[in-house]
Length: 240
Image (cartoon, rainbow, N blue to C red; front, side, top):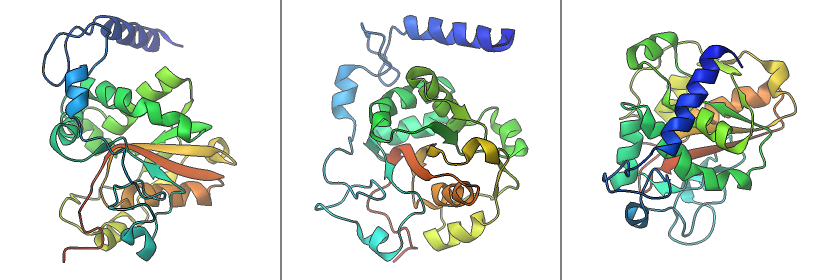
């Protein structure tokens, strides 16, 4: 560990040890948690019936209609929260204030054991996008999860071009927009590994699917995905 990494780790340790208020409401906390118990109780937890493939909320147990039509390339995907209310705000704030990435990681951490991953991989950004935002929120979340769990983090994939805003695109449009976007830069590192892709939210699943495709082509044994939130009651294959 070089001096910069050591200082960064010391600052994180200090921040964890001196987290006196809830990141969501500002209420005083006593166990160094980033979200107080009152706010945790009001978060939209994704803990009822979920699709076993994409992890989205479903009305009744079983595979969701979207996955029956076309499943994700990932073997499994999970998210602890639904993308609404305060959970959606955490995703929004993680792109603007870096410490909210640690908030996201803390809420995602309990699901890590479900995957038994050999390593974590994050969704990369282009250099231009990194300069514009200043950091990659997916990488920040993945780094925090790696630090807390001991699971290694791989810098295995690069994003080769800008894809533009995808907010209003359906799944088919997103898939076309993402084709050829990612390149595996560390094929040796991913070969025969069970990998877990980390991102902030699962909307249509096109991003994690494209990433899983290139990782599997590079020899990954299994690729799963863990996001903070997943979008429920949307139309992943386009608007009605």
